[in-house]
Length: 91
Image (cartoon, rainbow, N blue to C red; front, side, top):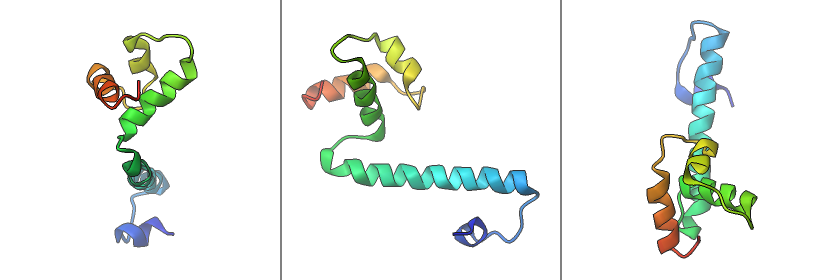
């Protein structure tokens, strides 16, 4: 798959620009794939990320600030996401 054809752009300023656009495109594609994969489990990628972190700490405990620091998306409201996981009885 050529990024040029995929996004219908004929020219890039340079190879660095092409690589950046390719990374953004690939990240977006992977996010979509992850959402599709997680859909049957009724969890979001952010919830999955927290569950992954908690599994790595099991059977120990981990502070919310540490979870936030290990998140892929650090802008997440970790407390609220964990509350949703508790409601779903996953935590």
